[in-house]
Image: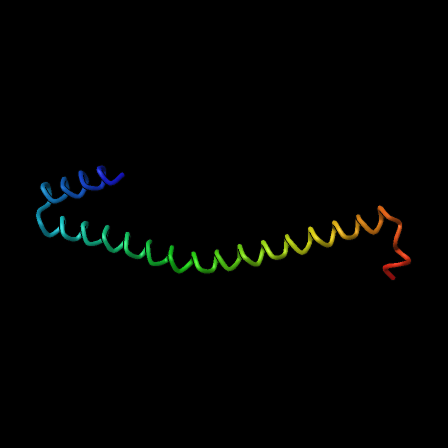
Length: 80
């Protein structure tokens, strides 16, 4: 993909002049920078969401196992 972008920008620069070369080059650089910044910004929210989801799954699993253990040993009255 990078090679293709280089060829396209170079071709535009050769066929249409330096003005369009720098315009396309600048747009591609700006696009890459914005993509990196937004990706890093979203990554922190994704990490927090993953931690919260892992904590939820852990608690749900523990609750289910505890429920099954109580049912297995027929200890409902003792738990109440």
